[in-house]
Length: 434
Image 1: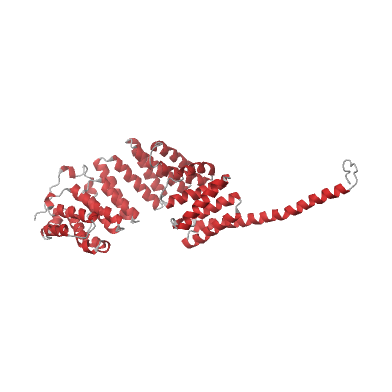
Image 2: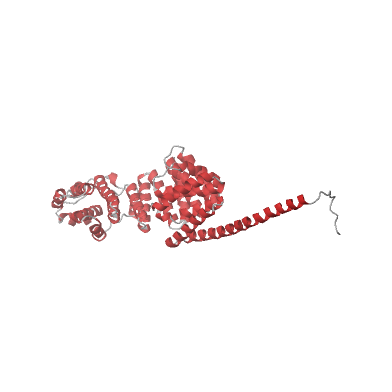
């Protein structure tokens, strides 16, 4: 069967840069072994074959000719269509791949790519992370001038913490976006590269890329991309401790988002965090109250509630503190956000300290210290221990003050009783002895 492919002019990148940065098609025979471990055994070989043939077709007729001529693709397609007992969300896209590749000279790259991406969607829903990444790559290589597919590969690898692969695909997404004039995706790819740099600890490099994304978004009037880049610059500035810059980026992000944007809630969350870092508890509390019940995931819920407790304690809002205290312990004890079992009680303890609620503070700070030891969170552990030391000093001073109060009271009583017992003698100004 012939595997000759005739590319239309529309398939070719409108730039000779493709020759400088050729797209390497991986060897599915080696990489695809993970499929046999992640996909149900009944259908695993068919999924593996779909990946192998998709990569072979993308490599071009010089490579794929022998593969398609000797692989019995039409018979494989019949086997796929006859398969039973397979999740339709997996079976259907693999059947499309088989149908397209049974006629390699007539493949519709867009159709084949979408089918590969559908397998990725199925794999992500089943925690088959290796399969998801491989089929995302297959989607990108069979439709090579689609920048968004390259960006999706980069995003998947970044989430899997395969940062080298993530950077490779994000850089390709940026180049393809330049070739095809996709300014939106170019700004998004630059933004993602900046965030990747920051995640790897290169704050300066990440900031420069994010500023580049801002400039492109302004030049091309991409308001949503401008807002997101400014929002990410806010986060970078907080991490770097540049709080004035952070507030400036927050204001610009808010202006670009506008009051009705769905991501405004995430901006408010980050701005509240900024003000908590600065000790601006009154400003933070106003935003945190507005964020109450805005999040459904336990992580954000607990962060908002614990921060509310701390801010309320700092400004003396006892009633607000007690409501947040109760809600926070309900989440903590339920284990829904177990990774916050050290950080959240620390915030609760600091709020209790501000209000002079020693028993509350001791419970929360002790819980934080013990959890931080288990989680090996050095910074949280140090802050919890320091706060417990401060609590101990406050408790000692409080006990000393209470111990003095009865004696002071007795002295007043004794003085008044003694004076009343003395005869009334008018006294002038005291005469100095010397």
